Length: 340
Picture: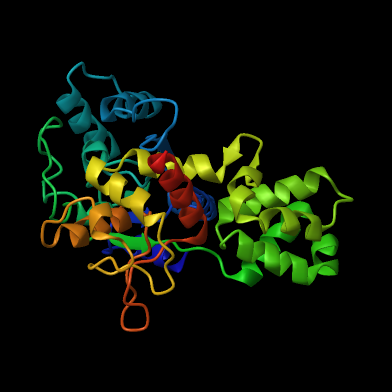
């Protein structure tokens, strides 16, 4: 929240990219901030779900979003997509408005929706860190121009704020459980609540699902759900409720992997990882390797981390890539499927 507050500085950044793994709460964070700061944007807030990771179909085309935004602003919609992007920027010139682009799949998808009006701000949520994956392209470049990889994306004004969102610590998971399942109930079984938070890996989506299941059965002890989740073989089966599923959410990230990276991910599910994974991939037999070319494993590991399916190295104290616990269980399932 404090990082996003930097958007309010008069001469500060005009774009923030909020990134993190599936289910970590990116959208909830941004909507909470937008609601609290509504008075700072008197000309309104525009929201678009870009469905970059959507099980139901293709990502939303930028042109569809532009048409809807222009109608909301009371502007005639030009027939040409490039003209629509120009009309959108012109419509917001001199205004103070917030544009939220949720669940972006690529920089190409968001680039036509960026605005350069001094009073406007843009927040993008994405599983990938878009600033590291798109070429520097001026915002007035034609909408159909392809964007190569490997250099930062160009956005109006100063460098965009990068806001990586991580999992919740145990005390905040317990608080979230209490808000949904009942504070007194959670306080009476504090130890079980902390164990439940650990079994959810601190992932807000998993915690919310667990809390919703408890809320449905007010007489069910927390220890009962802990017992179910303690079985790794069925933990992802239990983390499903009201159309929400941790497994399905992770699967959307997996679905977007290049074939070589997907095959490596499957193989890593076979490996115990007490020390994590380095570029030499200790514990993976040579005949299990996706590709034996020098340096290829290191690049594939970077791709998996970029897709938020591996946690990247964290300096001398954590020099290797690691799985989040629930992603590890998903990888184990994928490995078993690949072996069959």
